[in-house]
Image (cartoon, rainbow, N blue to C red; front, side, top):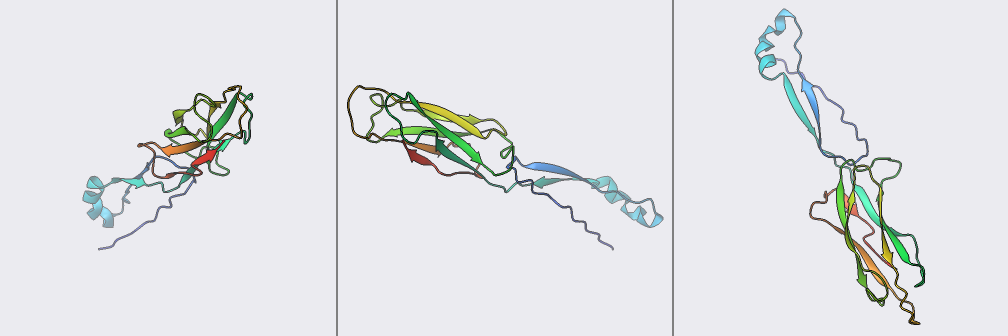
Length: 168
């Protein structure tokens, strides 16, 4: 009995993808000494290879203003996919949650609270929301509120959230 093994290279394209499949076909030469393999060829001539993608992607938070006054109107908070030099780092849709919480600033009096699910399309790398800053006409000291990025139940475990919070 002669066993011949072949290696097939699987390339890492550095993109976070759903699992992929590749086809494999066994061919038999038409030489007389290989006619013994006819049964094998008929029964096992095709196989499917599951390619598990173990790349990881990072989604983090960014704010466009680090200091604002009450008359500015809003602060833009953005969730960004970090994967250098890749134009389509995550090739499937995904969701993350973004919410704000009171610090010294109080929701409705000083800012408009948010609790939103950000839905990214495949290949989308940035999603932003505006948090309204309310002018309450009261002279106050520095006021702060926090924001947090959290996992949705359906978020792929290969997607890491970092950083997950910040302060305005």
